[in-house]
Image (tube, rainbow, N blue to C red; front, side, top):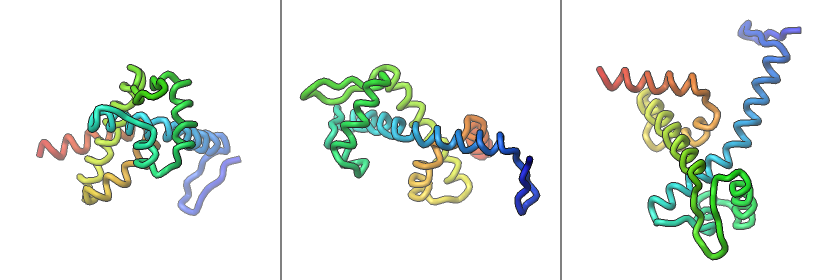
Length: 149
């Protein structure tokens, strides 16, 4: 059975379930992406990334950071040895770069449609994890077309 909303739009239960599953999946990858992006930024800025800095920047506790760093290690995105700073693996570096590019595309699009730089940076933190590749391509094309004019 298909449900119709107040705007006359309809989606089947399978379409709705698929949509909600995509959002749940994006939420699960958000943490991973935020961590590798931040680790890459800290390495770039300071030459190293330490758990205490990550906790401070993300506004979470050090035990939360430790738990999440263990997940990143299991997923092969970071290398962490006792009493050493955190390093990204090649896969981690590639993911961090992809996240940085997604962030920039979203920010540039938001600024192009009139959002202030500060608000665009803030909003992009959420949008970048949930936007499809198709939508990103449209955002990129929009800003590139606009820049050509």
